[in-house]
Length: 408
Image 1 (cartoon, rainbow, N blue to C red):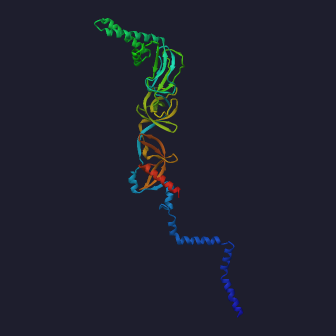
Image 2 (cartoon, helix red, strand yellow; image 1 turned 180 degrees about the vertical axis):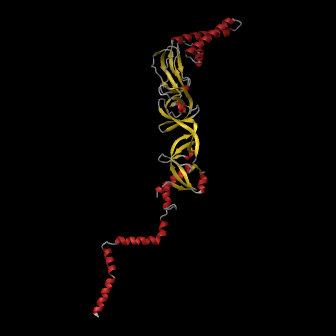
Image 3 (spheres, helix red, strand yellow; image 1 turned 120 degrees about the vertical axis):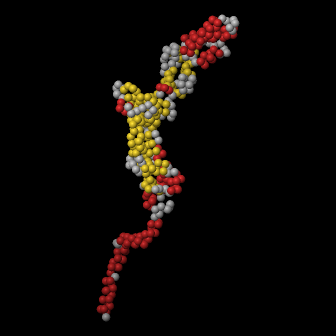
């Protein structure tokens, strides 16, 4: 009987031996990882649907949708698209004017520039304007003194008094000959001081002054145009000869850019062609106003003059620039309206593709040049649906999505 009891106990021990080993393994840390992995798999299998719900973000979107936002994809409702006036259109080739690229140099606009110089020998009495000053038309620039002007002023004064006298006496007392002689003498004296540099207002002030006018030879040179003084090469007290340039004035609100093109490219350009002048990262539009008829003997190139507005005073004479001139022939290119091409926060050019209704993707592209209201682009294939109206709204929605994604 004792023997049978021992056999039963031994059998029980053998049957439960794996459980004992497993328990001992848990105690010393072995097998613990295997146990936890099994538990996790069982938990996922039991609660898979609940976990998916837990992974939704605070705005009702799943992590998959969050990934789309971060990768440059957003969705807009029909109501949003209608409110923003979003319109998409297939990207197609369009016929635009060809472009001729050439180097150029900024120069003063000679048609808006003037030189100020005396017509007689004189001495500099005082300066009333200096280099860099902005002056208005008829502003006094310099005071001069001249012996020749003094003599002419004396003749003007005498002839003026004589003409006034005969006019007071009248035709009954003064002969026609004396009246004509007085009138001619005054006209000649007035013409002389005018030729020497006095203006009509200066002459009138000189003659009609209440005090006795003095023929001292003092007169002023005035600005013939409004603009900026770009040259004033003289010093006080200096004796100068007739024709010596004292001031140069230029209206820098418009400048010229002299571009040099090959003879073949010159045939593609006409007066009135649109041009773009690039200086640094700034591009300013202009217009071709003249085309030279003679080739430069040294470079064998043709000069093309482009007039460019310069109200912001960005371009300065002597600066070298790049010029892009629209030619008379046409080429087929991929182009979009200017409002469809924007810059992203990194400064790159970007457009927005409508992958399917209401789903938009940002696409970086390269801008080749602009032509009128169109922007010629590269880095994308034709046929894709591109946002042509309302791109700014789409970009703002991308910015909101990026902000929300960043804060999650």
